[in-house]
Length: 51
Image (cartoon, rainbow, N blue to C red; front, side):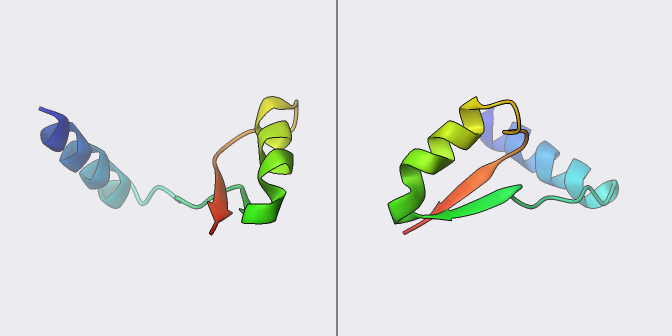
């Protein structure tokens, strides 16, 4: 079930050409800042923390 839903999601993204990219990228040393950003008023979208 989970795999099927994931395939459907990827198909949707591909078919409708959904722009998928993180809103912000943080380094590992900025993890606390990433949490503050996600919880704040400007934290809309997804964030990535690079290891």
